[in-house]
Length: 98
Image (cartoon, rainbow, N blue to C red; front, top):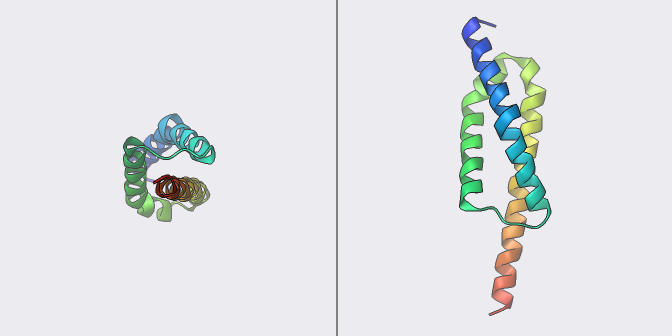
């Protein structure tokens, strides 16, 4: 790994451990409890997905990152799926109360 990539990987891992993973786990807890995502939450997930797309090449070049990337993808997919389910329930309940 060249020095530039070491710095990039270090920065990405630091961002993950300090910000992204704690926020994702908080979102997962909320959607698992039946809550819907706010616009701010959705913007966060959009940034995460955009960043993941950009980091894809880095992960492809460094197989040791692939397991972590797969676990993160699963976490974000679970959050998005559960959030969609919660939103669909909210909309159905809203229609039923009309």
